Length: 465
Image (cartoon, one colour):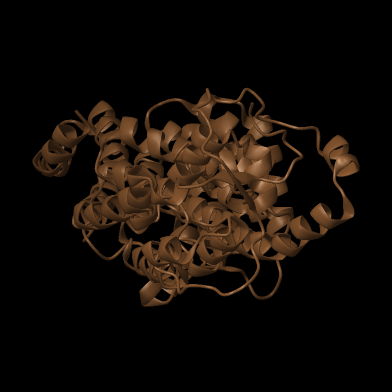
């Protein structure tokens, strides 16, 4: 009959000399040794666990091949608990041990079917064990706890990898406005794929959160780059991915950055209603005294302007101005980026666009000139040629509305000669072209602007498809 779970483990004579046992020992396959003990000694997982100082569930993992013994300390504990004879210890790669036996031997037993007893209620088992047995279990518990700790810190990530990702994000943020978007997209895409692979590998819980944060930052960057390259579908997908990973990591500010990208993408695809929703989603997560709050309120304002709702637009701009006044003297830095410039730009440039869409061209001219002043006052390392080009187009639209087409065309051509003519610049330039042609189609300068627009718009249109 099989051994009772609480009786001492009894191993048949000749067990350690069996070919299959010696093979398992040579391979250090402790899970297979446990399986052979169950077959030839009728030992349950609980009984084996008591002998070697492991929980029944842990023994089950070894027997099912879900875990392997890799440390000498644990091999030594198993060998001692099972009282391996000298030749068996040698096959396991351990030195022979001199000492009294801890397990008894009996005559060879018949083969037994797998025992059904896989679990024991912990409290009931503890009550039934003798003080001696409990002492043996407790002696092994410290080593088992140490093994749990080791496994908790096992990782294929490492602090150096996370430091490297931080350097990559800093470089991407710093070079976003100065390097070609296609080149930056390739870099960010490669690292985003690598972070995805690391998220599937061995990592600690803390590293998992940090990897999710970097995954979100990279996807947020990819959203903007895809937007620049004229692919709104990819841009929105990356923005959604950024929000989800940031949310999973509990990083509210990063959720707000992702929502800001969603709002801009929606605006440039003619979906101001979705931009309002995205801005609200971001405001739920953004820190109160942060430039990002100003930007999201301005996002909501310009979206309402596009919807023709002047009153709600004004309400959101007033809120953005109040938030701007409450910003700390030293703005937070996003990797290498001073976020205060983004707030100043949003208050002026977004206000200019909103005024154009609401037909208030005098206000649009004032805000557009303020936006250009913000750009020109910014350090060269933080200036954004594409945003500056859009500010010039807003000013051109205002001047076209004020019946100054020659000045409007001149500003439009300046915008199209920017070092960074991305899809958003082309979209706004088309808006200017339409406005000029509707009123001044007979002017040669308007025809010249239309020709320049057609020349530059073809690559962006191809990319968008």
